[in-house]
Length: 349
Image (cartoon, rainbow, N blue to C red; front, side, top):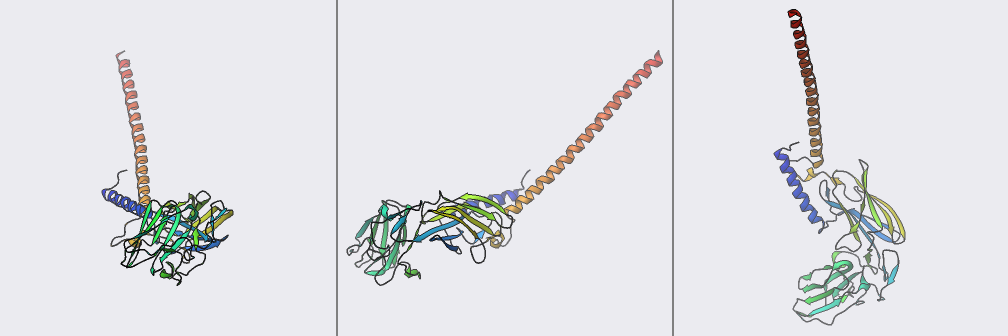
C-alpha cells in the first residue's frame, strides 16, 4: 500500500519528536507527582519518570528505594556493613574538614568505598550559605570532580561521585572559606535552604536491586499487561527506571515484584488524581491544528489495508468468473466447429 505524501511527512515528524524525547529521557527527570509508600522499613517513591505524561512520547516507570542511614551500609542481599565512622553523615565534621582555604586555593577529599550509598552534606563553616551535597554511588562520576565556592553560591551544588574519585573544592571568593562535612552548627544544611527538614538519619538509596526486582505494567482500561526489567537511573542513588512508550491514554498500573534485601515485595501502584499522573492524549499539546494520534493513524492504515484486500478479493473473483466464461466460450466454439465438420463430411458422403 502506498502512503500519501502528507502521511509520510507526518510519520517523519513523529519519528524526529520521539528521538528528541528519548534523548531527553536519559538525562532529565521532571518529577511532579509520585506516590510514596513505606514497606519493611524502606521508602518507595513511584511514578512516571517525566510528568505530565503524553501518549506516544518516550517515558519510563520510575522507582526510588531508600532507607534511613543508621551508620550501616546495606547491600542488595540484605546484609549490612558497618561504616568506619561512628557518626551520622549529617554530623558536623564527622567525615572531613579543611583548614581555612585562601582565595584561589583548593581542598581535596578522596572518596572511599566505605561511603557507597551514602548522602553526605557539606558546608563552608565560615559562610554557611555555601553548602552542597555529595551522593556516593557506584555509577557516579569518576576522576577529579571540581566544585567552585563563589560569592553567589556553589557550582555544582549536588554531585554524584563514585569510589576512587577525588572531589576538589576551589575557593573562588575573595575571603577565607572552609569545607566541612555534615550540617552546620547553626542548623542550616543544603536541605534546610530548600525548605526541607533536617534529619539526624538522612535517607540513602538502596542500590543493586535490578537483578531482584521487576515491574508489571498494565493499561488499566484495556487490561493489557507486560513485564519489564528495571535498570539503575543514572545520577540517582537508589533510583530505577523501566523505559517504554505509552501508546494509549488512560490509567496505568505498576506492580513491583521480587525482593528488596531479605524481604519479598508485591506492591501495586495505580495512576490517578491522588497518586501519579495518568497518560494524556497528545491533542492537549497541539495548536492550532490537532493531528491524529499514532494509534488513530494505525487504525486508518489497517482499515485501508482491509479495503485494498477486499478489492483484491473482488478482483480475483471477477477474474476467475471471467476466465471460466472464456473457457466455456472456447469450449463451445471448439464443440461447434467439430460438429460443423462432421456434418459437412456427412453430406459429402
